[in-house]
Amino acid sequence: MFYASGGGLNVRFIGIGGISMSALAKLTILKGHTVTGSDLSYSKRVEELNEWGVTAVTGSDPSAVDSADLVVFNAAVPADDPELSRAIELNKRRISRAAFLGEIAAKYPYTVSVAGTHGKTTVTGMLASIFDCYGEAFTAHIGGELPGFGNLVYRGDNLFLTEACEYRRSFLRLNSDIAIVLNVEFDHPDCYRNLSEVYEAFENFTSDLKPGGTALINADSEFYRMRKCAYKNALGFSVTAESDFRAVDISLQKNGCFGFRIKRSGYPNIDIELSVPGYHNVYNALAAAAAALIYKVLPQDIYRGLKRFTGIKGRFEYLMSFGGARIYADYAHHPTEIRAALQTALSLHPKRLIAVFQPHTYTRTAALADKFIYSFCDADAVFVFKEFAARETGGGMTAFELYNEMRNVRDGCFYYGDLLSLGDGLKKFVAPGDVVMLIGAGDVKRLADIL
Image 1 (cartoon, rainbow, N blue to C red):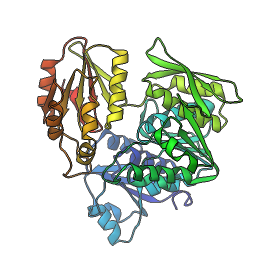
Image 2: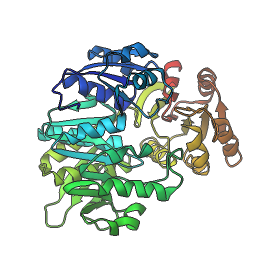
Image 3: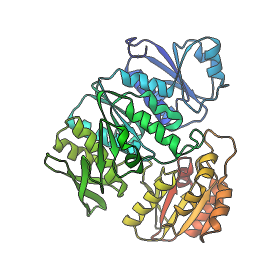
Image 4: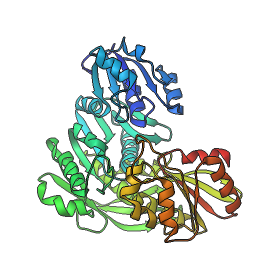
């Protein structure tokens, strides 16, 4: 319905301020439809959408649903939401964000979907940079802000690049030509009971390919080793294991980022130089390059695209200097991501490292508490900040409870329940030369505004 209509629909987005929803709203505008939307929380994205010609408001306006031809809602919208209830009452066509994304992707001749517990947004951004250099007519739906582009890159309709989120198995709505799996770990305990269920979902994702499609999987991962027998059309990328695409001759460059060579059986090697720090980005860049090679992108465009890529906003993002200390922000909200962010910080600045951590959701904090506690081993001090509950109202473990567990096994651990007191505590603690990492997917980054 969305693409087949040729424009002219009135589309209402409930939860329009979300990173994915706002990108889809922009694309809907570009396709000639009228877009309105609402979000319970004010954000700069809502403000930006108004500049795009979207009528977006903070709060809820059920009467705005009356004129809608289609209502799109995200996973965080409760069943009793006033606008969604109004849409049900009027029998409006309703579609979830995940289904809407799948419907859009299905209209493109070729789709590349990027899945994984970590790195989805970065790899999608890398792919957008590569295909922009290549000159392809592509659309990229990105779960973060790519500097210079934002969360939507529109260059045409030949190719659709999207990150594929496993939350509530939403990525099963995508039917891909290339389905990338970067890594698979236990996350989202509010919709998966154990790692086996997560593995099953990823296996379904990589099995539901278009005819002739390819599953591109991290061959160093436990998921690949345990499930590779299930795939007939799978290719692997790796750093350590033998695979179809392997990173070799990995070296740390003068800019603090890594360079490496891509080794492919029967093809010339390709040299890569990155402009983003962190060893984990070797895997991310290798995955993006491998997907581009499958698409027949020229090696020189892959090199240029990855060299030009400088990161995603909020992923190891330098914010400011305060009292001689350098302040960074990172979206990490899983123990593996936290370790990677802290190790990257130490590789660039081997000084005193201070982590400010805001846990994200009660259920994740409870399910991964032990791993969270030990993910901060590289930090000299940890400031735990009140949790960001997101879609949850209780249950699980609070940030204060995690702090109590953490201080039983390490020194240099502090807790603050509000931003102002956190800012005051940090001001008294930091010294020239320190590196401060603001870690979490919530609003901890606002701390930089009061320092």
